[in-house]
Length: 216
Image (cartoon, rainbow, N blue to C red; front, side, top):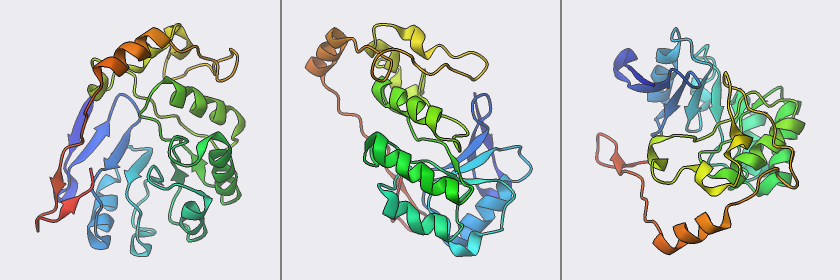
């Protein structure tokens, strides 16, 4: 269930039944980010997700700041961690160099007492890899997944594995897959059918008030 909250003129999308998080899809300016951050307080969120916070926003909110889905290596995360800009990092193993590099990023964050929440709005291989990482990272706090999400209505991640039961969630928890490799078996026939159809999904185009491009 999605709930819109409008503190101080900013609209948050709160995943009320899933993660209790606010996602800053667009990149805020520093003054906007500070207002945005303060506005999230009092709504029981466990994190705010989104763009890189500026130095000016440190200490402006009691809600933990989470970021990192668009950072791609240890070097991208290095300054964010050393400057104390974040409470939870969100590296995506599909973008940040795979399992080994993401494990190294998580270890860096652990040294700064920063939590780990791997970014994963993707397919079954990516989710299985993230769960295996969660199993060995002491600072893992939550795992994103896209089961039943709106843009997967005709292409859900369970369609591509032979045993959907490996991702059987109960009360917000799921067991680490225990099979060979990542613990899943890909339905190759489903992959071949999907490849024959192809896709051309594009994100919506968002713009700031001045007409400049805003990241989705």
